[in-house]
Length: 232
Image 1 (tube, one colour):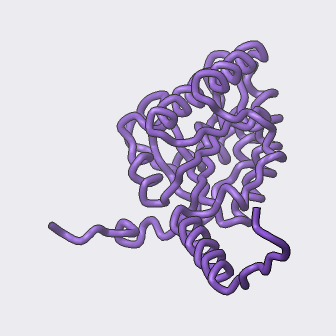
Image 2 (cartoon, rainbow, N blue to C red):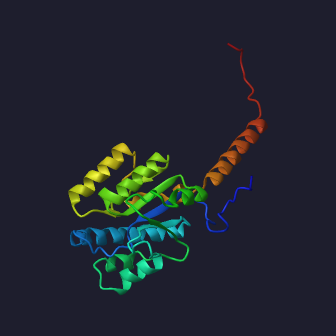
Image 3 (tube, helix red, strand yellow):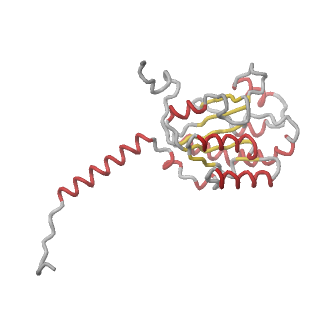
């Protein structure tokens, strides 16, 4: 048996207990109902941009999970160029959510970010146990990705201000379903304690071991208490 490769040949150098997934945010919104999605998407992008800034500062992996809308011939560079260089409806949103050099990318063929993609393997090597799922649309690709994450025993967080749908009712209903069925946290992004969530499994185990050794040492060095009076 070959030795287990801990970083997929250098392609997954990060380790984190949490990752941020951006679902379909590199999006031209040039589809039916795209005009109705634009305003909620822009409001979502503002909140998400703030979350990404905090996540990157905390060294939390950021993963763009996007539809391959180039007839299976496109890559992320081409998709990003299309959204930025052409006069498309989604351009202002994409400008607020630009990928950075250290971010990860997964192309998906269907609604869920896990369906026939490398996402599960990537999360395994990152040692992720919690996913913060953001993007478009709350009642479609976000919800289906969250469902697949839950079935893989991942803790699911869907910040309600970092996802969007065409209709407010659809947005609220999907969040309620994810909260009840998937046990997902749907609090606003600003309430997330990213530093706590980012602790890697290995780091948490080491912390517990150090704490146990410290407590054991303190117990050994503890002097017996002298009792006065007769025993009862």
